[in-house]
Image 1 (cartoon, rainbow, N blue to C red):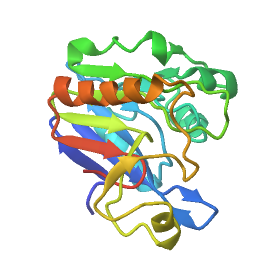
Image 2: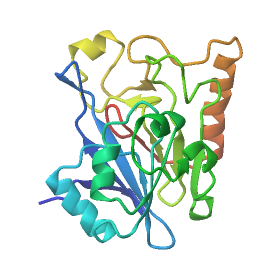
Image 3: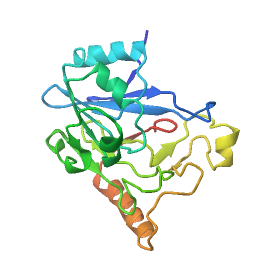
Length: 227
């Protein structure tokens, strides 16, 4: 049986999982695993872990003993951190401010204060300019920390950028989704950037900086596939 962990590039694996909206539309979600120079692992985000996925994670990380840290890059995707912590309680957990306020696990710190902690291993993180990573608007799920891994030339993005690998279905097509199209996630409500006149230009410059600065071949996205 094939492993549910998808090898994206050197020392980088991605796990896909289902995530339903309106209890019927599977828009997908994911988490990633980066092997560091120490032989330990950085886990990026969390998702539902099936028995088959847990067996694969255990095999990769020596039953979780090699997990150095688990980071949460999107403030509103919270439901899988407690189950993952229950399975792997000895790792360090870093989250966005909303994670720390709303999820009752022993956090090691605010991820925004630790964006550079894994640069020696070729892991770089940036928060998109022109967006609010801790929005007061509970419907604004746009912003997430971008994570780039040099070794695999891969960018992990939780929500801000999406890719429609398969036919997204009638409802999502009505929201502008098309198979084979990469775009920005607004949840169909056209929410995302800060409400300032500078925000669009700031976000445009951020995306241009990502393209210019990061030598990437792959993007793994939560909704709805990889590119």
